[in-house]
Length: 377
Image (tube, rainbow, N blue to C red; front, top):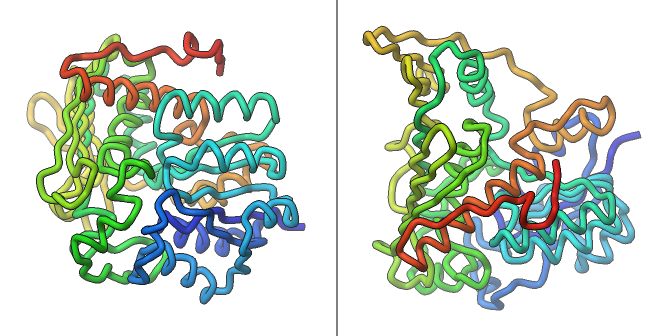
């Protein structure tokens, strides 16, 4: 008997990729999909590719059973896994509803808009017993784990600095392409059409900071392996004057034994950016670059020698969130640490301190999640 999954939310185009991942997983089946009520009614105006209405209709055309009421779908389907792809601001509300009807919930990155909301999700998870994971698209890029193995081996010496830049021309920007659609490019949108959508509105949790700086915050937390102590951040809107959110952001993070430089952008083509983080260590640099159409891990030693590592063997059980969850639930395999609640609470603490820094104009202390709510794990 297959595990049942449902998709909740059409606000995020990652719903399309997750639908394909469920289809590709032999141990799972999709019991249904449904959208939530948008935070901003204007989010329903557009019908262009990757808009909310278009995402839901594309799921319908691909064969998903569409429910009008997402809460009713939960009650009827009683899924093993709920895949939440709403706007960021709805994550806590939707998780609370899922906790009573689903054994586990996957929330599209980031976990929440604030540390307070993230801790509320942790509290509900603890009280209900519902597992919660965060789906990071990069969690399924095997070269990332190869970089971590090299770092943890001590081969390049202790970590000194993580540098990570993530971005594109915006979720609906020039020639935007999202997985799950066969390479379909976004259509040109007017400034008003974009301004109508949650991505460009603070009420829905939009903006490049939460969308893109979150990747670097996660990389800093995950690679450093220790608590982040201080965060200093800046954001700005330089190319989207119609929007109420930033289109660029950066953070400087201080860990106990290392630092991280984090950048997120909606104004740069993906092709101009490195495929992953850069790890500066005492004895050299661990990075990656595109070679023959794939990301290859590159080691650069202090004497200038360069070594490329052979790509890791594909791991079908770690190909996607649905595949990893099936391995976890059916065969007891741990979920990747990137996706776990503990890792993501620490990421939210970093993002929260960064937002405080944007407001104050100075470096801010990163709150310990253990201190915040007596949370352990």
